[in-house]
Amino acid sequence: MAGTKRCTACSKELGARVVRCPECHERLIPMHRGEGRTLLGACAALARELNVDPSLVRVAFMVTLAVSGGTALLVYLLLCGFTPAVEGGTAPLQRLVNWLARVGNAPADEMPRYERRV
Image 1: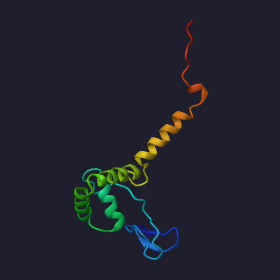
Image 2 (image 1 turned 180 degrees about the vertical axis):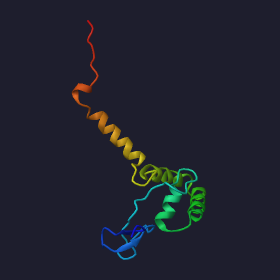
Image 3 (image 1 turned 60 degrees about the horizontal axis):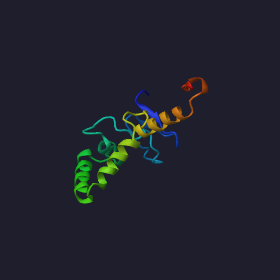
Image 4 (image 1 turned 45 degrees about the horizontal axis):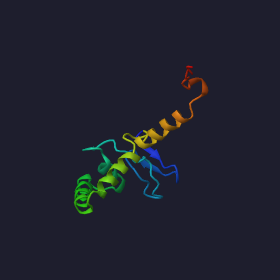
């Protein structure tokens, strides 16, 4: 069938829109901030992960933000940094780490050459 997929852990046949396998609870779609974004999409991604309404997560975030004195904002930004924007994409912090690795491991022929003037 075109509208089905198979769980990689238990090989059970599932519907196309299923996020977690009901048998083994294996995650079939990686967490991402894609659809349902309001600001950066972290609350929508968390709601999709927990299988609750995104409005409830947003209200809980606002209450936690008021009570925590800003710590919830740090958690929100970290969640945005570790979660890719699209399914199958790369998280922003991972892109930064990859870029730093490329800069640090540049081949010798791509290294800038400096001229020594006397």
